[in-house]
Image 1 (cartoon, rainbow, N blue to C red):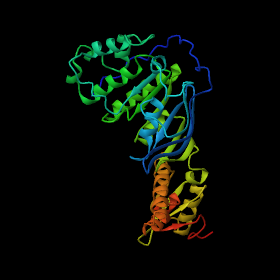
Image 2 (image 1 turned 90 degrees about the vertical axis):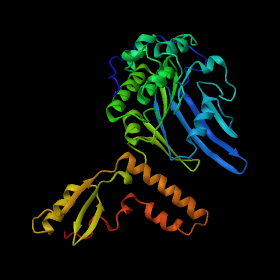
Image 3 (image 1 turned 30 degrees about the vertical axis):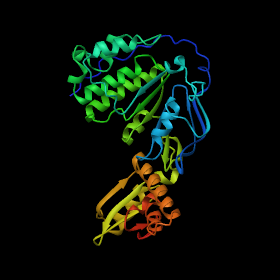
Image 4 (image 1 turned 30 degrees about the horizontal axis):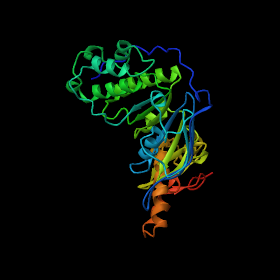
Amino acid sequence: MLAPVRRRLSPAPRERHDGFMTEHVVQVTDLHKRYGDFTAVDGVSFEIARGETLALLGPNGAGKSTTIEILEGYRDRTAGEVSVLGSDPGHPTLAWKARLGIVLQSSGETGTATVREQLTHFAGLYPNPRDVDELIAAVGLEAKARTQIRRLSGGQQRRVDVALGIVGRPDLLFLDEPTTGFDPEARRQFWELIRSLQDEGTTILLTTHYLDEAAQLASRVAVVAGGRLVEYGAIDAIGGEAARVPIVRWGENGERKEVRTSEPATHVARLVAANDGLEPEAVEIVRPSLEDIYLELVERVAAERAAAEGDPSGADAATASAPLAASSPKVTTENEGVPA
């Protein structure tokens, strides 16, 4: 088990940079990336305000990694406009790179250097680095400071990755699947570290397959599927109001039923009244989570794409994934099946 995060990071005065005072740290407009006949990114547009955390979500192969690599300056774009920290990442400078922090899915940092040696080395590459001992404490590795990185557990090595990503006090931090391999307790400790960075004013672009993590850390999300941006907005607004209407589920005559209603308690009361005052079998009220809404969006896009490509199962898939309520074999409207 990873050591608990004992200390919050202390902020330091930031230097003034050209472009730093712009309202948006990241601006992406109509971004395209093509490889021959294959389009990996198809007209994606979004913005990230200074100090904001945006979660970029999507299934594998959706175009997330390509988009992020373009923002990081590692990959050229085919078309579109991109501004990161006031500069075009297609023409990166050393000063611009020093303002980025990047935590990849796997860094491969398993050499003979100890935790403190590695962080001290990287700190020397930045003009305004964090205090190494404070950083080691912040990621919960004080007891492992003199241990070679290759001898650390997978979770501990992941903490080293994060420490390396933030040692230079980045204005913009890219977190790519940062808690992969963490146990639940370690994930929540890591979230506290990220909240410390947020309090410091760090702008963060997060990619994760843990939807609860996105809900905990991000203020807005951008959902990418099939290379396109299919949803973009505040955590509590994506999918629209209809996607968040509660669902009442119950059993009746051996059949599972459900209904969407903005007044779930009233609907349950009607069910009880119609059942001679007895509670219906296995009754439950479900409020769609971010994961529910995300899955519905992704499934709908996949179904529409299959239908467009002439897949005979595409129409059936589109029907099955269209409304979130349609995931049950028996769905009624609010007033169907229940006596008034």
